[in-house]
Length: 329
Image (cartoon, rainbow, N blue to C red; front, side, top):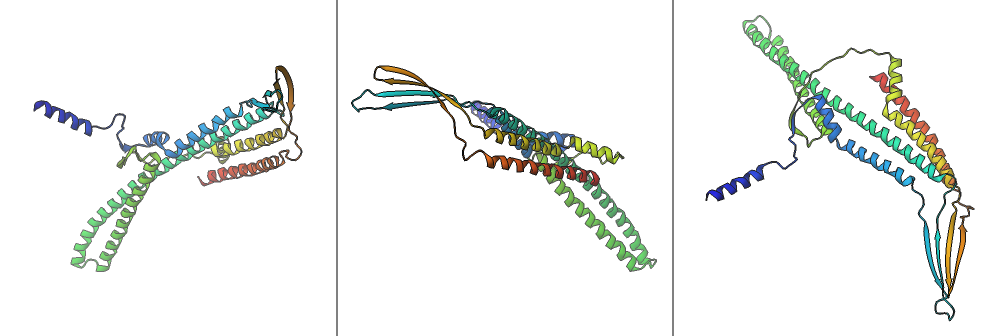
């Protein structure tokens, strides 16, 4: 009986124990903790990281040489003559610098993806900081509103006594009561703002790592920074990832134009042939060249040239947006 009870207790402990590797949910969150968790747990950021790895893998494909070709042909079978067997091996040789242009285009795409990843990280940090600040502002607003309600309750108590003695009119007492309702509304709005900001913060940080009823720890500070506007302009143009991504996209478009022009060149495929006719063995040599009569890659060249002009316009749009955001902030 003792052994059975012990076995049951061990089984109950095993069932109630958390699974190995499981992490407890955070119940208290500072700004630094929120940024670290968002960097590690945010699904959008992780998806962009995997996308960057996928784009970078294209560099491997771009650097590969064409595979050789092989063919086998059997002729004159059952015709009363000696059968003829032919084996041919060929190796396509790319001309016009196609491989080099492919690698340049793939590397440019990797740079674009890298800057886009940095921009997603920047926006995520701003989202976390903004939501965290909104929670702190809501908490401060709620504390102020509750304190106002408390103070107004004390004033109302005193004014009721004065109204009962005839020192003030009932209208003055009614004004105080109306003011109290306004403070209660401010408190309710602050509670709703806190809930909304906490939901946004938890979604950005990772809902699986943060408990539903978590606390935000931090204080509101106001650094009095007044940098020159020209310095902000130069810093934004030099460091904004979205602007750098637009510049990298322009470089990628130009690399694609070079690749499209290189693809217009014909490729040469030398072939080595072995042929057996009866008991006779022969070796031959051949050369295969496509005739670029109709398709000279005109459409792709025109498309990539238009993409260059489009990327120039998008880069200018990103620059204007960056400067506009500097003015707003």
